Image (cartoon, rainbow, N blue to C red; front, side, top):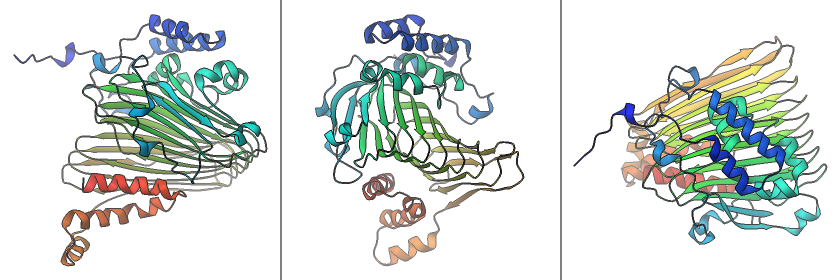
Length: 445
């Protein structure tokens, strides 16, 4: 017998209660200040409505088909082992060595290593549960106080109340962490996970970091409610790569925000390949005179995937530069949304801001929206934006096929050419190879 459940009978929000927050606090034995932060965030969460299609930021993304009765079950108690993580996800993707590797499976830390060289230099590379006790001062000052805040939205507040795991990277003043750091978040169980990444670079510090988000095939709906905070201090330099390839049962709701200080540089690379539905806020705050931020985004949706990427470049100081380029493709019945905004605060002169989103249609049934925006309150700026759309031209495909190349491979070559401009902005060969492999998997299988 088939039971048809009406939409009105399905849960429209996660079923968490204050008791869930209190149970997490008791289980973790966290410092009192962190417990107070969780409970304050919970009160805020309860006071906020769930996002709806009436909200401008959400009107193109309907997530109501998520089965919360499956997706809101926290999976932190599921058995976890490093053995379940495919070996290719553990290999260095930046250079031949890793300064540190931290692997979470189902929200549990299953592997941790860090080079003595970095430890001797004062670099902190720790999971958040450990950092709450051993690096409390750093965490208390920076955790959800300067970049992602609980009041940024319903899911930001939920994350602040119930985050389950994550990583802290701290590089002290005048220290260059020359060996890259690698964090893997891998799920084998269906349900909810809430990971957090906090990177703090003090004055004149340098670091390179890669974060991998992946999951095994699932049977039920899952949710990832995440946050990323990148705090780049004066004259510091951070190269940060995040690659996401969740299974097709996962719904991601995330906030990612960077603050770049005076004369500092951030090179931020984002790759979105997986999930069933993705809603991600990506914000770049240029907070110091001469700050420079570059954001390069790759996304490729197929079947019935839905990606909604909301980017914002905030010029909060004069003589700042931002450069954002997103390139995406969609095939089958996929849907993508990119909403971008450059904001220039009053009296913040000599601003150079650029944003563009270039989209490639690979079938007649896809829909891709790109909505750039400018909000400028100064009169000495050079800000521009663009959005372009196109499809594969038959002529180059026919030319390649006339040379004996099968159509899927010919289309792959054309699509790879479309993404080449973006891939050239990625300074890491193996990361480029990962993105190229994702393109091939989407086109050829």
